[in-house]
Image (cartoon, rainbow, N blue to C red; front, top):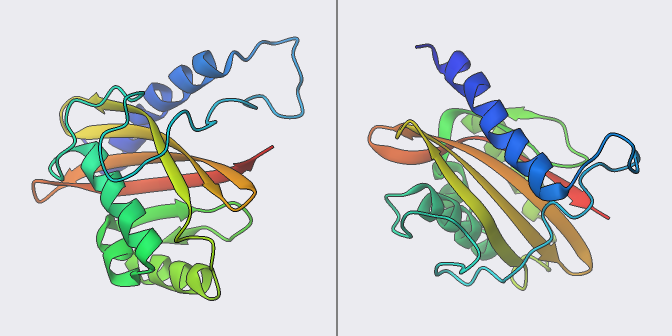
Length: 174
């Protein structure tokens, strides 16, 4: 099965639960369909969040890969951030151009971390972890940086036996 097909196959597994949790309906407010989808329910502190449905919290699991990313982000360590991603990963950060591949991801995060003082005090909450076929996973999280709130969606895959982020998207929630 091709890598592109695997990623597209994960899309419904990621979107349908998000829409169900968000309580979206056809006749509702169309300005932002997922207003409450990723409101953090508990802070990420480097250990398991009681609100998540993860199977384990070790670094060898999807949750651990996302926790490592958050730790590297809070530390401002670009090398560790980039190592959390697969070599051909795609990153879509709210308000920024899409970054594809390790070089573009490194450049994006170097730019993002310049003068960023609120990352150290950021609070991250892993909301949901779902493993698909043992080789792919979807992780949803929410973050608060200063007064700004973000919701994140991670697609992960096993690369060389380790969980790596293959796609990451975030946007600012209202």
